[in-house]
View 1: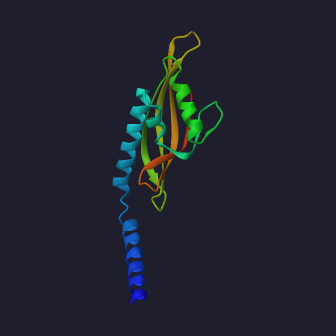
View 2: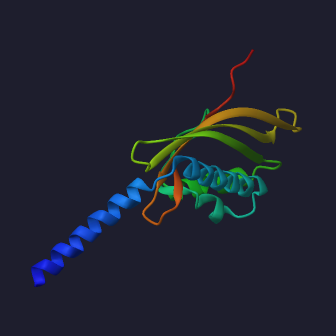
View 3: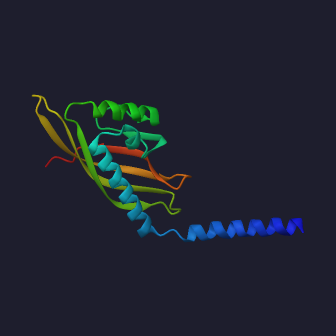
Length: 157
């Protein structure tokens, strides 16, 4: 009797796992991820809550800013965000698009456009346009978090 219960529990577990995999809806998950990314962009643009901004990256995330050293891990990213937000006049915002998922639905990437305002050579604010790519991972807690974040300037015409 005990082994029959164990087999029943295993069968139910396997079927439940199979159903959750079959339930992956790319269109719905894409909208969910785009909304999460837009919330993150708004928080970063407001520039007031470092901990909430940093919470959108995974603990093992890598940030690759143009012309700067690679930033690895949550503590280093927190320091990077903190120092960026302390730059007088600094502001960043982005809009991502076109979510592409891995076959298992556990990873996704998006491309996007961004603007960053920084002090220029003469002290006046300069707004720079850029483009970027983010790679996201569905974490065990059910949240999408960014694992790779890279950006650069758009091509010059």
